[in-house]
Length: 85
Image (cartoon, rainbow, N blue to C red; front, side, top):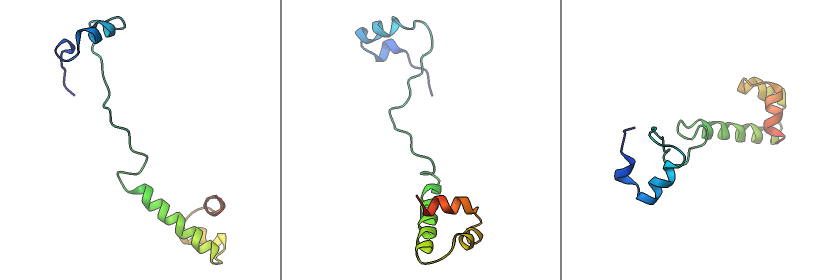
């Protein structure tokens, strides 16, 4: 992040309006980009979605919850949340 003089960038009308709220202080203006959701950059989101789909599929094909919990190293409650959502 670098410092830039607002009077060199902003139109005079906008600068005067901003000065009504703050004058002489440094003002941070965030980037316009939207934040990505949790796990989108690292791939964790897609990993867990795929895992949960596998668990749901195995449950529908007759595997019981206790076996799935052992197989995926998850608690029985977590498996229930996945298959009953």
